[in-house]
Amino acid sequence: MPDKNPDKNPDKNLEESVVDPFKPYKGRFDSCQAIPEKGRNKDDILKELSTMSQEENSKWKNGRVSGTFYHAGDEHRAFLNKTFSFFSHVNTLQFDLCPSMSKFESEIIAMTAKMLNGDAVKTHNSEDSVCGTVTSGGSESIAMAMKAYRDKARSEKGITQPEVIMPKAAHPAFHKAGMYFGIKIVEIPVDLPDFRVDPANVEAKINENTVALVGSAGNYPYGLIDPLEELSDIALKHNIGLHVDGCLGGFILPWVEKLGYKVPVFDFRLKGLTSMSADTHKYGFALKGTSVVLYRNNNMRRYQYFSFPDWPGGIYASPTAAGSRSGGLTAATWASLVYLGEEGYLKAAGAIMKISDKIKKGVEGIPELTIIGDPTFVVSFRSDDVDVFHVNDFMKTKGWRFNILQLPPALHFCVTMPQTEVPDIAGQLIRDLKEGVEYAKTKAGTVAETTALYGLAGTIEGNQVVTELLCGAFDLMYTV
Ligand SMILES: *Cc1c(COP(=O)(O)O)cnc(C)c1O
Image (cartoon, rainbow, N blue to C red; front, side):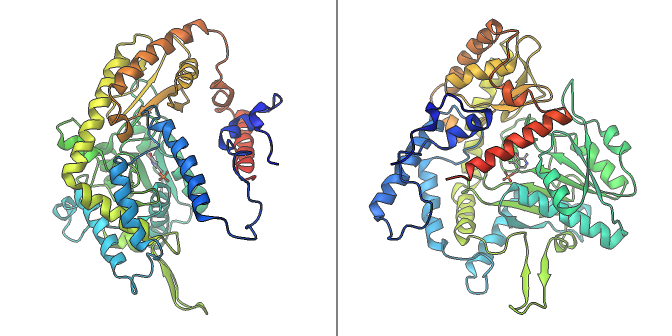
């Protein structure tokens, strides 16, 4: 018989309480420790998956989950699933057998480059022409750009100890790439009052090993756009690269700008911008598993490619980190772009910004909360008066899932399409948030549940404890 629900265990430790939510099916559905001797009934499998999917969808369909679910509605997703099915068995790398893959990928890149004002580079330098590759996600796009900067600097400048300078609020994928590729990541603090990096602090860290600067449009914690014009000038002055991370904002800021919102220049209109990442699987509303990395010219892209001519298995090469890739995802990504069109993306961005504006106004009306920076589609706030982690504890009881920020403690809500399908979601959020602030006042002086994990990071010992905890959580997650 299957185990009893582990939720009932009164002795669960912190690690288990982190993992418990991942194992609700224990005891409800058969667990597989090995490939079943006899294949299971097809309808049975479909029923089981459908149950899980429906239960999980109900958690975000109410619009109460920040970010995370990026798609343009059920009808859009059903359409993408259909486009996926035509090529689900295809390896994107095999474009000799399936030339559709070359068509889709080249057009995804061209459409993304055009959206991000790639045409502007020709006016800066007629030799330049924006190009790129499709990857499996934002982290791979960032990793590929970092590898290209490293290899370019080694080949053209003889730099063997490469360094990249980034604002502390930039995504951890840059640290991951730094660890994978042996690049030193130099962090510049972002702090009060506006949580944007000071360009002078960035320039002060440039030395003979610096290969590139990083800026975000916008960054994950606050959704804020770094002072990119200044970073672009600094990059040009020192003849180094500038990567703009548009993984989050790349597919929404162009439309937000077109709608008339004031958005700082963040794309290839910047003369010093040499590469940019933009996630099709976030606001591009494609299926999960694709992103685009763009370069100012093909010389840069060449440093990303991998080729190994003398292998007994044949001449081998791959443009990105992955080997085989899903042709289904490639087709669905292309389909998302051409199906929505400018019109569809503008409509989506308009609906998202309307809600984001309302949330922003509502938070501004709560005197205990302070908005961080000048938000667009992500609204982040902190407090000098209450513990925002208590506020989060309360919001959790109402089914809300905010993203938790630290250093300093703050919360953010990233508006995506699910919010646009729930009437008065901003009103619901603000009403609950006001109650959450009152709840936090009654809890002053006590430790919030959210603090159990988030209160630890920041010190060397604390970071070690958190790392151990998270790795332990992964271990448990991978336990049947
Ligand atoms: C999501 C995100 C990334 C990483 O993208 P993945 O697709 O999760 O690998 C990088 N930068 C920012 C700003 C992001 O929001």
